Length: 187
Image 1 (cartoon, rainbow, N blue to C red):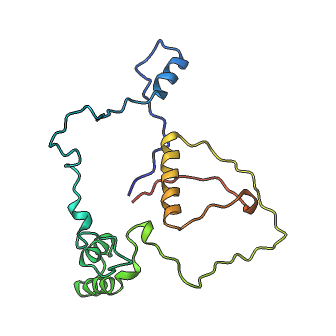
Image 2: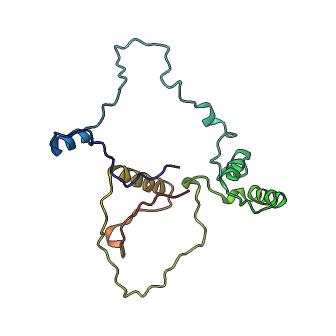
Image 3: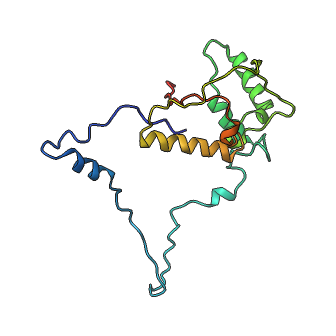
């Protein structure tokens, strides 16, 4: 899982002393050149497989794919990954630990290994008991995000949109807003 970008400002301009700030800003904004392999019709054909370093055999083999909650929730590789990710306290005896691991194996279908495996709970409704006349702030007092923070946030939002965990809303539907805060987990 990706970690959110740090909030500190890198000191990448410390070695530059006699340059104007505008020149430094322009130099840091220029993107690095991306190497490109251009193949045209005039390029002679070779037997080189440009995608050879990408392993694709495992993508078709269901036994190695652990993201099978919808198709094979009790896949052994999936169960092993769930047991690896679940932290079991040190205060359990060996017998209790084996019971917990067997429970994890028995109910492996309720664990999601990625956001895309999260399912909606049928019939679940979340209601907030708030007076309909209550007025909330609809003006965002958002602290500006750095480009790495923005990329991280947009990537996470897109992942949740793709998995149908969240959905976009129109500005007229918004009743309350609050600023987004990126907090790095300690574990």
